[in-house]
Each structure stands twice: as structure tokens, then as C-alpha cells.
Image 1 (cartoon, rainbow, N blue to C red):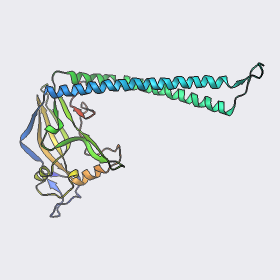
Image 2: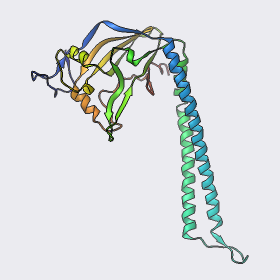
Image 3: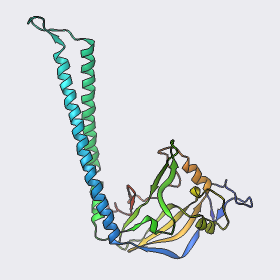
Length: 276
């Protein structure tokens, strides 16, 4: 028997919410395909291309601002020396000139820091980016769509969140990529499930908002297949609490990625960093 994380929710009879893990017999088996992995690779190449363009444009903009700031420094220093009727120049800075000099120096330093930060970040993530790229190009890598796992079930990296504008911030898992290398891997994925499946798992009817119906999916990856072996319902009170969390706040319902896994946009790369 599985006891929910939060015992505040009650069923119609008033008992604390409890439910057994709903074991799928037989498991839901999905075969990974090279075609889906190829779609992922194409999408990643397009994203990388445009990301590189935006990065180059960003650096050029920063450099242009930096050059303008250096010109401002030169201009301010030049106007601190005053000459009347061709006489020898003497040092006579105005407050406006001093302010312009200080402002230009600060802008120039900010540009140097920005360029340095961009280069440092690119260098720091180079090994990781190379490993992810090699993983995507590996001919043994297969992929399944997130919406293939179970009918009307949407796996997510983290629960949805309502922002200050009452918009919904969602983080669905669009694809799951994995290597067909004979390694047995097991993961647990949070997902939004239909009311019928949630009720079947807990054994009683619910009147909860469908937005708060989630469950953990026990997933096993073996060879070229991904299997969903069990569905473990989550207390709606816990889901509601996560839905109303602040931006950037983690929850106990976040997807349980291993150290070797990578979340890349809307895709889950299982074991992408293995051996790194």
C-alpha cells in the first residue's frame, strides 16, 4: 500500500487518502525509434544554429557599446583641458564632463565583464555540450514521444505553475531519448493523468479539479523499449500546493533525473552523460 505524501485530502467517506500503486499488467511497452531521434536531432541543430547567431549578434552589440564607451572616455578626457584664444591648455573639468567620464568608464567595464562572462560560460560548458552532441548523434540512440507513454497522460519535468498574470507555466516532456546499449535503467516521472486512471489507481471516485490529478510513472528502459510498469497517484493537495508555488521554487514533484541525465529544453536525455 502507498501512503500519500500529504494526508490532508479526504475521500467521500472521510478517510485519509490512501491508494495502492496501480501496477500495469502487462506493462505499457513503447519501442523507441530512430525516426523520432532524428527529429530531435534536427530540432536541436536548428536551435543550436539560431542560438549561435543570437550569441554572435549579442557579442557584437556588446562590443559596439564598449567601443562607444571608450570613445566617450576619450571625449570626456579631452574636454577636461581648456584653452582660451590658443593659450596653453589648462585642466578645468566640469561636473558634466566628470559625470560623462565616470559613466563611460562604468559602461566599458560592464561590456568587458559581459564578454568575459559569455566566453567563460561557453568554455565551462564545452565538455558537457560536446557529450550531449555526441549522444544525440549516436546511432544507437532511440526516442519516444512523451505523449506515447499512456493514453491521455502528459509527463512533465515539474508541475504546472500559475504565474502572477494567471497564465500557466508548463514544462512538458516532449521526448525521451535513450541508448539501446543493453543497460537497464529505471526512472520515475511525474505526469498529469486522466481522472479515470487516477480513480482506478486509488480505488475511489474523486471530485478534485482535474488540474490537480497527477501520478508518478515508474519507467523501465531496457534495450530498444521503454516500459511503464506502475502508476502511483499523488495527493491532489500536494499538486495544488506546487501549482501555487513561487517562480523558481522547486517541489517534491520534480522529475527524478539521475546525475547522468540531461534536461535539454523539452527533452529528457537519459544517460547522456554516462562515463563523463
